[in-house]
Length: 327
Length: 166
Image (cartoon, rainbow over all chains, first blue to last red):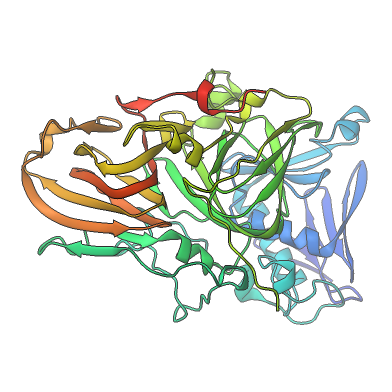
């Protein structure tokens, strides 16, 4: 049986209970342990849990800034209106063997298919945003669904979290208990003394307490906005499920604990550097690299982005450098 | 049950990580540590530790009382160490900050206007410095502020001094 809804092409459930999906010439299917991706010149296998963690970020982030590599073979490139789905495009060996494949889709079409796949392939006990220690298994035959988890709303403050009318603070009452790794993080809020007439205009909140109550990992959320300058802090535990290929300079500020980064050439995957970040460290990720992080203990990381839509074109045309600064 | 310890940095206790180069130039990573920068700064110097086009992250050593400043756009002060009092004042004459001016400007003296209030912020607290309001910091003991803003006339660039180069 074949099913088509809103440009989502899928089959009926296989013997494991999962539907298969197709996007152009690329097909996706899964069984109890693995996801199988096929394109006209190749095929690829990924562990189901790693695939779903990557797929979750790609869907929730609207394909993010630049390239979301699910691993060294498959992934997406955001063109902000359309999205490339690729296999082997950013892998030197696939490129040289001419086995790579790229197809471009309108964003709503690929997002619709990815969202449907994520929902169908995520069982009731698995949360792709959670750390491995805080979720059930992604494996086995289909067993229910976890739509609430895979359709979480991403926090995107318009001005600052806690400002009246903007994103609310987190608390036990909002369903955000303090994470087990952050039980020692002080929960005191700043003292605010507003003069009469300025209530609601004098605003501050505890970012660290807010982050200690995050129930997701590797999921930058916007907490403050200075024009296109976006503070996107996130809590990190275990491994960044994707390898993020930059289309602009991105900055990391280590707020707590420690994260290790592998940095590779964005287009070929050749190793360039390893970065160790400790509390207070600040580092740029240049616009021509890709990176993946490892966090042994849940850590607070401030990801700082310039959200200007003009940057990818400026960098591609050589009008803006791939380096953050020259000195 | 494992007892987890969350590690933050401070002026007194910080340890830098670093960039291990395989095939690249370390300067491209612009790697620094804000506590080290603040430890070497004069009070309230605005030292850039991050720059993305016109936007900057500035580190300020909070110590004593700062000058009054104001910007035509919102800024955000994250206290990373110590306790900082943030005093806010609604400018009687908003034109002292030219519309469209990027970054904050120094005000020559205590500006005239209505007091909006104050915030006592400690480590991890993020305070909005609203567009069109003047602000002043005060810290009894040395602390560290990370400021989300736009590069301005008083932004200090010391990349060669603060960043890993080898």
